[in-house]
Length: 410
Ligand SMILES: Cc1cc2nc3c(=O)[nH]c(=O)nc-3n(C[C@H](O)[C@H](O)[C@H](O)COP(=O)(O)OP(=O)(O)OC[C@H]3O[C@@H](n4cnc5c(N)ncnc54)[C@H](O)[C@@H]3O)c2cc1C
Image (cartoon, rainbow, N blue to C red; front, side, top):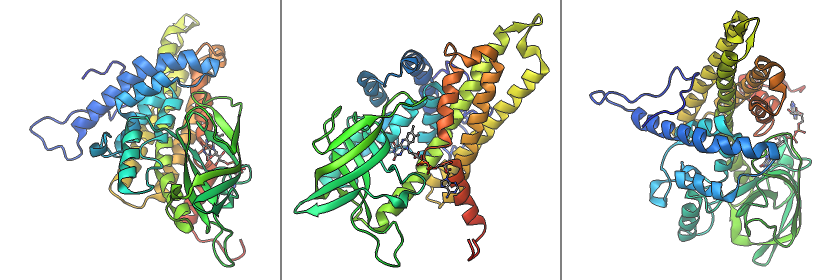
């Protein structure tokens, strides 16, 4: 398979292992998967991003179908259910390629991958996994609330049992893809914690099946106007007595629902790191082209050592973050606990992406501060990566809590 757009930062580019050597890491297959994701991103995603993002338009349905045909909604779903049967390593590798073109596309694939399919009996689960694998079942994850962002245990949206239904009341904020989704995976509270229990006790997850492109009776939404990440709308949601069949409940409630949410965040964090690497790489690649084209003082600006060294450091930082996210993805794939490492890579890769894309704007001079070049989109999208999936400060908190105990005074 050919590689239409060489990645200038990728000094450890996956290369097929010679046939006479063992390939325990499946590198040859990974190289093929990467090359195809890169082709798809550069030939199909990038032109669409350049057209739609300036108009703040969402990824159209026909293109979601294209992503589904590529198999990218089911990368981590077993092949027996129609998925690609791959691991978190390949999921992140593909996400990096997609984010290099448009972060929104690298993000929407996270709203499938079997999310929300742990419900009901085996037959129902199998049906939902199959729908998820090809993107016919794309969801929204509703965790955050106006008063529960970093402090997720503070979730106050209530679920009250009424016969064989749950009745949902409360507000959610920042919920991406909520209206276009086929279902909403909702973190809510079944009961208040008893005395001495953790605040997360009494939380549970509910899957709300719904009609695509509408809200059911008892749920209204208002889109939030953002500065980037325009590929899908982000919603403020109000639940006002929405009735959901009780079997929609996931994980039995209580601490386990919160623990399951936290476990899912490890994958989300390494996926975010991979998206950040894709964005930073996009800035480096755009700069490499620009500095050869832009002439000042009779030279392409790429002749100036200040620019060359800046680019060298940017590229090295991208490569460093890539190596780290691949390491953490591998830890997840082999079942190692890695909450600390997932927090570390999320912190470092996303802060790196903000700085590198910002330097990309600097290298573009005045042209970087326009919507005529793509580097501003890379920066706007990178700016979000240090905020969602847990802010940089929350990652620092997770890491420091595993480095040293707090004194009784804190
Ligand atoms: C565009 C966008 C899309 C999103 N998509 C989704 C989605 O699809 N689903 C979903 O559920 N959520 C989503 N979110 C929500 C996102 O996860 C939260 O915004 C994020 O977790 C931060 O919460 P907050 O905005 O309430 O900030 P806050 O928690 O209010 O934080 C404000 C500041 O205080 C700092 N801070 C807070 N607590 C501490 C502490 N203990 N120690 C040190 N510093 C602290 C933070 O780091 C931050 O700098 C999205 C957010 C955005 C902006």
